[in-house]
Length: 368
Length: 154
Image (cartoon, rainbow over all chains, first blue to last red; front, side, top):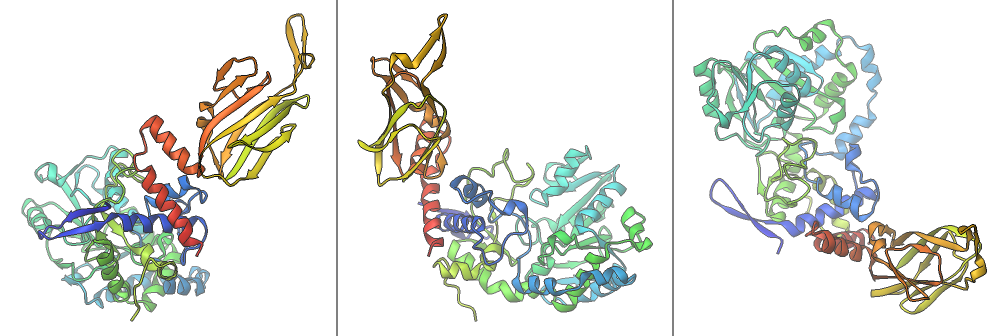
């Protein structure tokens, strides 16, 4: 009862401890409703309407969903101590952030970005969504292509705005196509097994590929890429998956050539969000890019072993069987019908609420 | 188990008895809300008896009832869970022998009866699944919920 087999691509089999996972999900959902979490949620949907069975059940089904950052208490505490409004008075703060960001990335030792310096144009982005919208807008006559399992927001927006798109798996790549791929891949927390093929194919056909390094800071030897590939001329980075500043909408777009789109215009006009850029600058001055991997890797190992999940190369993810076969199906997926990430567990709530889980006997993780 | 009964349209001070598992919990004019904590486990019969009504308590003019001593059951809440549609699984047996299924109106003297179980939530989930076949995981979910409640009370 409550144990299912999760097949790994390497042929290993891990038994997902569904019963333990559900017990944790219910307990964390109930604790959300009764304000007992060590670190409370950051979204309205993270709070059950009440502590009754039905509200708690609804929340229990989404406890491990989303790709959002670990709500690290030290980062939260630091952010709360900042005087962010002072950044509004600093006309150079966005530039300072954009200048500092590439060197902050280069300090990372858990990934390899060869020829990173080719991306000379660094732009603050109001979340990667601003970069994506600009990418869609400037390539509106092309057909967008993604692998199944990539960030569902792309497909949802394309479907809603009648943009031409297709999964890469469903048709050959053609000259009028344009591709997006996350690396590490959003669904698996590792390099997509066809990523190299995609780069070669895009180069051969002469089409562009936007590489979204959404989970790069939280990754552990997942990324090794030569960015000199001709097809790659835009790369994006997100803070919302790394630091608990999701709602400050902080991201970065880097390009080999200077773009001429609304986002770049905002940068050139010096009207970017200085509160967010200043916050981002404060954060990268304080925390290294691999802060989460250093801090949480042993917890990831602990929880993956305990719950029978495959440890991914992104520190807040584990992979396993879906712990709820209802409520998260195609018809009723969270936020979007394209959000199909049932087997990817965001372990952040387990890390953040370690003390609570220890107190009630659901964790015996030992800090070193 | 916490039992909560909500009454409405209480006209001319009718009288009722509230009985659970043959134990009388209340006798008098129905209050708008009746709450009591009772020690009951497993299946039980809830009875609400309407009594003491006389023919003169019904005023008829030109073959139309213009005033009638009566009341209605509005809501039934078990352990904080409104049983909602399950309230219609009840019946009202009038003293003259007539039986009215799904009747929450206490017009004639007689007895409202509903079979339920404690814990209330478990009974609600189970009964709904039996009727609608749409919640196959109810028992596992219920167990997790109860367990979570216990853990967090530590």
